[in-house]
Length: 354
Length: 274
Image 1 (cartoon, rainbow over the protein chains, first blue to last red):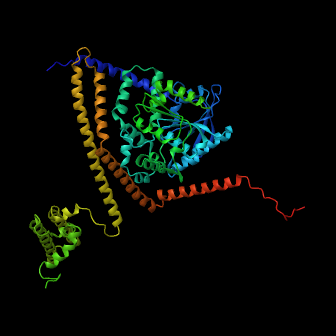
Image 2: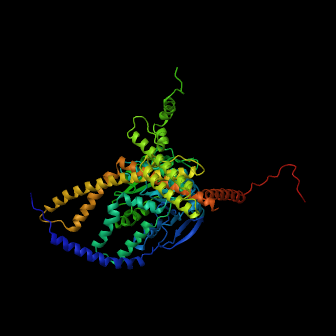
């Protein structure tokens, strides 16, 4: 039997060093938490319907001439991750390229919103926001960037109202909800969603716990241990704390919307089977003919690439492009790789299709 | 000719037959408190004897009390009667507890009670709660078993891979390297477990049971709320839906009013007011 090379003294020294760093880290994190308010790009509230609001970001570069770009984010988590701080702001990067950026904020649903449905989200709120932008600019169609579940919404909306969308970009967007890598889908199959939502809205805490349970050792342990083992500047710690706040600040999901989305998309995969109908209108992805850019993350544990990639076979867009980014789901919004690649690509792609 | 009212135990057997076919243990459980056990059941004789002894003790105690009252020793003063009665009650309680605490009645009480009397609904609701809690505990235990197994597998893989890493003389493993290796092993084993069909089934069953439990609890709290004339979730939901319908109607009327009205075309013969 060969001799093992463990050096107990070296391991003990390393542990001691880790303890020292962890002890130093705590007050530094405390200080960073005080400076971790989200440093958003200035914007103006231009439209609202109840608690749902539409924001237009102030231009910071000469207009490039593209149609306005509406960002449609998911209902889970808040869109602030698109504009967390100036150095990590996808919105700021898009503005830097001369794009006119709008964002729809779904607000914080409460008990009185429990009956809000997908029909409300798509045909009332999203439709209202789109109509406002079209009227404001006197145009017939705009550009849409749909993110995660917001991408799925954008696909449905474009299928229902194709004339209103000039170019569509989907980012980390699930389309096929029943692929072997999709753990969320596997967990959703046996759920009695009717019973679940009979108890009211689905809490953000529950959704957070579910996302953590996808990779619990990495997301609840290693992430924090790594923080102590790497040298962090106060600015890096502030970024870390901003991310922490964003991750755990999840709004509740209206009961009806959660039921419809889970049953129709996760359990019945209606978007792929062509059997989806929202507000009495059939959602046929083949009705989408506009140019389409599909951006996905190769290491996405929430929306695996296999859930995004089938889109090409379902739409009728002849101008269809895929961009793979070597990062994870969250990394798509904030990683340095994504920051360098994605806004540049979106801007170039849109400006080529004015 | 045989009838359903034949002599001996035949009538009892005839009564048992349909009940048994519907629910094999229903009849036995009903008669259990009275010392009845089906023929051939283990311990039937013991149970009957136990019950008979309890009744005999009860009659003995009653006789003793009557004798005390009759002889005048207890009835001579209210205090004397009260003391005799209390002593009798204590003895009765102790004897009956001893007799029934281990007997068929005690065993029958462990089974769910049927909903009887004016509180039948409450009894059944409490039983449902207990059943759901028990089910949730079972499922939690099953889930825990799955996760424990995956951790055990992770530990074995980690030990093997750490031992391999320790063979590398040029780069002996560091503590952080070992920790990161553990995370990889743990996540791999966890993923293999939680993607499995059985795990998904148990987790979904647990979630469904927890939701059913929550719904049952809410239903009971709402009953109390109604007693106190507090608004219930059902009433609030009805109001929310009514407001939603009114908002939609208002929106429809607004749209109608703001839409440009079609101009009335002048037709021949229209009088022009001067």
